[in-house]
Image (cartoon, rainbow, N blue to C red):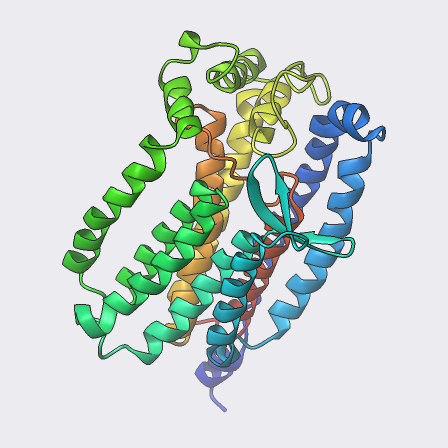
Length: 372
């Protein structure tokens, strides 16, 4: 066997990516407790309530990461359709009383005994796996609009409608953007994607500007001082948190805005809590770590031995990076409030589980790729 053959037969498990994920998880647990302790004590009479629950999900997520890293990614071509079908069933079950969890008119979770999970989080991963596998199968037809792209738009439209009805417009937008990225990477014509995007602007307009609370969020985002106690309340306190942190921050655990000023500081506002306590240096570190994940994900896609591995890597990297961008965009008031969590850091068991499974699949692709 030649040196070249030995090199090609070696595998390249991406240890740098794995170690960066561990760093983010450690940061997540530390700031989850910092952000949630007072909130948890007031609402649950236990300062460690959210930390303990997140730790359980973290243990489960790491187990699934290990399993996903061992499961050959090529076998997903046998699971993509059943997984998509199960996801559609789950998305419908959230609206059934007694099964779906409902709070304030919001239907986003399913409760089975003491286990509660969010189907829209599963939908993001299901869409990536289904599109990657299906695009490989339909490689010759994808340039056709009728037999190529259109069936995907119909399926994705149905998923997006169910997610918007929960309502969860942020997740629906993430799914749509991931789908467009994968379709383009899979060979769909750019003109078809642009045409469909323009058509999608019509339902998007009605989803935003014909629903009262979403209009209020837009107004509060554009001009928070106009309604500082309601629509503008969260943007104002997000700015205060980041602004008061300055360059170095107030110190770990010393933040003020998490003390009942920021709504749910342990979920979609946790990036602002980090900014207040660690300052610009801390938020820059978080940004750099996510940028590193994107670089490693694209590197895995480039080195993948086949089209399925390339598309899966692009889709999974997009899933994590888009969610991070959306969360940080809201926290810095660059984007209106959506409720997206910060991957690996925010409280949210379903989100953490799906993100760790995504990393596991990326690690498996890297392990099955030649080093050279």
